[in-house]
Amino acid sequence: MDEVSKEALTLLAFLYLEYFKYDKALTLLKALHILYPDDLNIMRSLAYAHLKNRDYQSSLRFSEACLKNETSKESKIAANIIKSKALWGLGKEEAARHTIMQAIPHNPPNPKLESSPS
Image 1 (cartoon, rainbow, N blue to C red):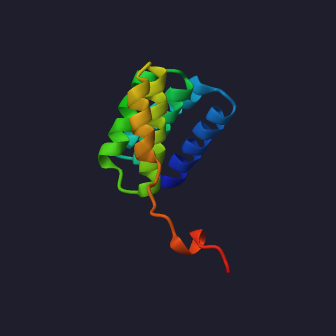
Image 2: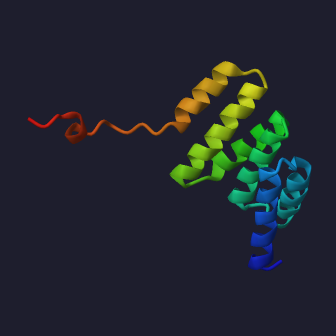
Image 3: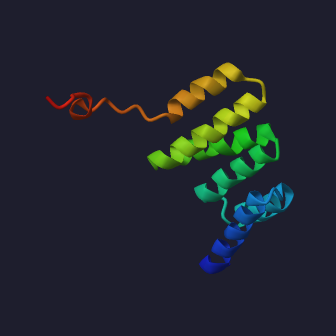
């Protein structure tokens, strides 16, 4: 499959998600995952689609797979948010809280912003 077709199918899956057609989105994303098993964007999209479809166990599995291989800070944050919501859906509230705290960037305060002009 060429890159344009891959992008078109991914976009169609996002549109299905946007319009609450989770089964159709999952069908496309599962097919894309078979063709591109190492594509982290597809895995993260699968995690999100399973979350929206209330298949929390599958969402957790795909979000954890993303986190094992993810290098981008922003993508790790997104995967941790999905993982936290999946854990919450499974009734694992404490693990969900811990995971969401990992997703929140911990930036030191900027002293210039805290000081008020004299």
